[in-house]
Image (cartoon, rainbow, N blue to C red; front, top):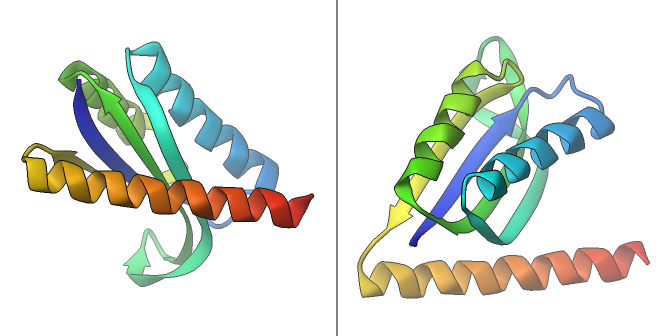
Length: 121
């Protein structure tokens, strides 16, 4: 299985529950197609670098996962037909140096999610 990172931006007009539902749907697509989610980050609503579909802001999510290449094809197909996704990017990490960087990002994401969970408790 290969190492991937996918970033997607949702419309800022969605409620928190709707955004969470879209995020969970994307996670399910990865898992149903043979992928293994290692870590994820919710960056919240942020200002976009430039307007996209007349939106100045977007809700950012990043998912780090391992999967066969067919999973990425299905994931990107889902991104294209989901109207609430205004941008997406999937990156494949191949070399040993890239995979080491991917592992560092995963560790950072896991620490960040632990801190968020502790703060919520």
